Each structure stands twice: as C-alpha cells, then as structure tokens.
Amino acid sequence: MTPVMNFPNPFSDKISIQINLKNEQQLTIRFSDEKGNTVRNFDESSYPSGENTVTWDGKDNSGSPVPSGIYYFIAESKGSVIFNKMIKIR
Image 1 (cartoon, rainbow, N blue to C red):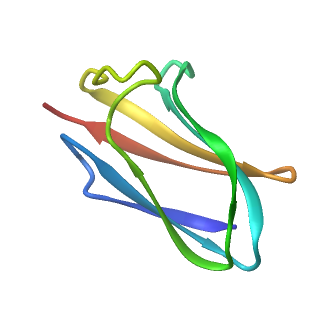
Image 2 (image 1 turned 180 degrees about the vertical axis):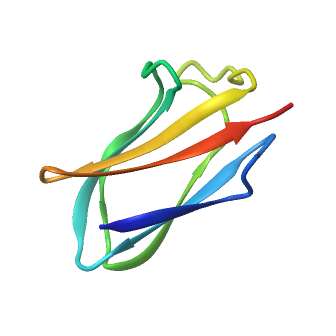
C-alpha cells in the first residue's frame, strides 16, 4: 500500500479516498474521530492492484451524519497500516 489521497478536504457531505496497491490485497477500512473512536467500519474486502477509490458518506455505523471535526481514514492489510487525516465541515 502506498500513501493515500483524499478529496475534497475539508468535506461536507462525502469524501473519496484513493489507495494505490502494488498487488491485490484484503483490506480492513475504518474511519475514526480525533479521539480514536471508530465511527464507521467497512467490511473487509479484496481490492485489486492499482488505484482504488473508497467513498465515505460522512455517516457513522448507525447511518447518522457525524458532526464537524477531524477524522482519520485507516486501512489495514497483513500488518501494514496507512492513514490520513480529513476535516468535516457543515
């Protein structure tokens, strides 16, 4: 996995995160608030090699919009972790 790019940042409704993979990988993806609390989990999935895009709708696991603030995108695969900071505004 290589570092990610997220856009737009800051965001208000949704944000897209690009991940570049050298080969196909199983990824666990989550979003957490600045205190480290997980607000949204994505099911573990297989992602193909190359550029992949993950879109977060700015909602938590129960479907409610998260408040404005700082959030982190975290992707894990076989002991490798990448993360990126994003800001949600209303």
